[in-house]
Length: 187
Image 1: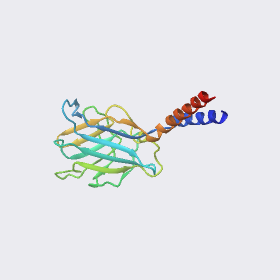
Image 2: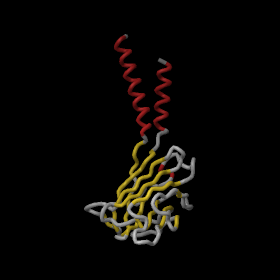
Image 3: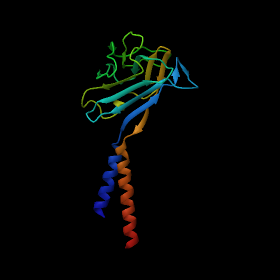
């Protein structure tokens, strides 16, 4: 019984160490107002095993091409961004406050071509070992993500998705509880 108590304690403590390893949202604010029909695109940040963040940005039909993107990163220095898949941005760093969304500490501007960065871009944020959670790269809050297309400025707020392994401690605890109940019934 003593070993069982220690195992339950370890599982409870492990549950407290879980973190969000992904966040995503849709751009549903256009030029400062809530869109009642449709959205402008989608953003996702996923924690990589090497401690960097994989980012993806896509516009939806009729939203236009990506001209610039920014996100509210902690600190005063823009985060390192690399491995752009579609188009290499002409500049990296923050974006100014547009429509009261707030200034974005990190991000990029696309080349001045008719299609900018196109309708989608994926890239890497940070350096290996820099992050243990996506929320070390983006600060949740009012309009944490901003995107400029030919049709205006879009904003979105991050929604955390639970880390898959955070379900493991709960499953272990439930399994141990079932085992204890079973042993009590047979005794």
